[in-house]
Image (tube, rainbow, N blue to C red; front, side, top):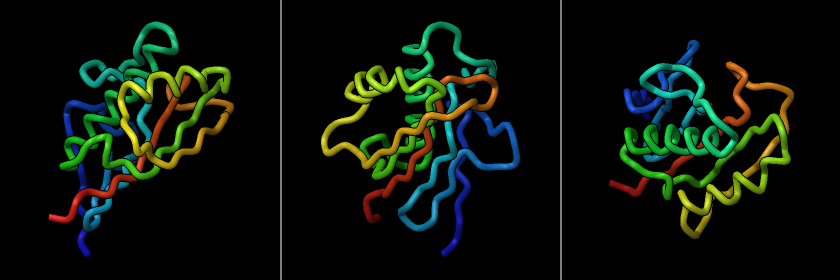
Length: 129
């Protein structure tokens, strides 16, 4: 099987030697998205609600560039520098996802790139074409 690199200008560009996402067959692995504003490559300003929303918008943009959407995510991994924001993440996820929800893990970490408070990575399975 061949690998297809997914790239979109509607999500932040990679800030290192990696791809925004890679598709193999009908499976897409989306790299971790932090709350960078795609146009400026600066962190979203504001509170944690704005950071989580920006991450979900970035994730959505990469999913759409791969030919899918958030509802195609089968596994979501969330990294938080403060697990007290877990409830907020749950609240916002309900605005972006519908049942059946993806499998998920949420991890508390000491720090994230660029000082972000949240990062999410995902695995999508696209419908057979």
